[in-house]
Image (cartoon, rainbow, N blue to C red; front, side, top):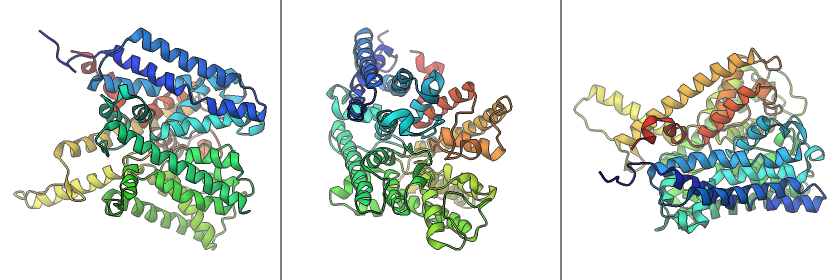
Length: 515
């Protein structure tokens, strides 16, 4: 019997395209390499990375051969690419051999956290003096590359990927489905990356402009570029040990609108540029996204203003009960950073009491918009869950009524609604399992002491690609004290979290590999 397309898996095709992706990603280390020469730092780690990426990519292309991408090949390509690229991304850390990221497990954790834009770190010391300008910029760059999507970038620049590009992007892009903006999928990928790059440049200009205006003395050009590269991908890495707390209030306010943009569906900005601003303002998910941030921001700001949510007065932050500007800035900043999964911090969350931390923990599960750089569950899924529950309540009273679930002016098909409930259930199941496993592992690791709330924050921070949590993994601390086994498990969580769980788990099912 002849085998029809997609009735079998041609793994060699997927592996060959992984080689192509790796080969072209080999251009990225040229930026930190140039910085290494400029600052008089060691260029060898980045030269080695270029050799490994380009050489390894060419080898995979030759060994695996070529062919056409089908649905199964797209699943395998996406999963493998997001595993192989972070693996090779460890080369600069390992070759440099400096600090806590010089060991294989720590280097993999840092690289996976970077490319998946999680923002969790195992750096025991974040300092230019210790690691150099070029190495810390490599951390920032990994997040920028991963934000819009490695494979979306490849579709944008490689004609050979445009044939199966829609299937590839559907598996990589966060949200329910990928919206085609132009007749050709390559044009859509280029449009999205163009918007992403353009807003990144704008963020760098604004940050550095505040420095030139004299209101942000330590936001020099290096820091402006470094933070712009991790704002738009909702990554949160910073060359500063104390994240955005190290900067003035003016800079903290400036970060907020760019984080909001990063958590918004980039396709909506394409419509705005095309003279259709109503597509943004009328979007049901966008309105719910802003409403969720406003609601959580108001509550957190209120508890900080009254002092109820503070367990102690922060030593490095001027949050004083009764100070409206401080409370509003800190409350809004932390909520925006968590909902958009950017993970920056303008104050240490460990100075909050359990009540304030618990309120913010709910925000970890929201996520930004579908089609954005944000992680976690996504606002659109919560909107559909709410509407589906409301419909069920209505039809239980009116069993003969036909009431479709609508998102804006469009009806949502039942298969999509079922998929949303499956994803949310699976996400919470993994979260619960991970909380238990990481909590139990902490008992065999003397340096790690977790409360139940801390353990939940560790699980959602990695699975949801948020970054910081509470306790030992607070935003001013690191994930370094965890055992190697726990770190590798969190690497797995970051990997499947970035690809929205199902895209990775499906390759572990027996049916995926059968004819």
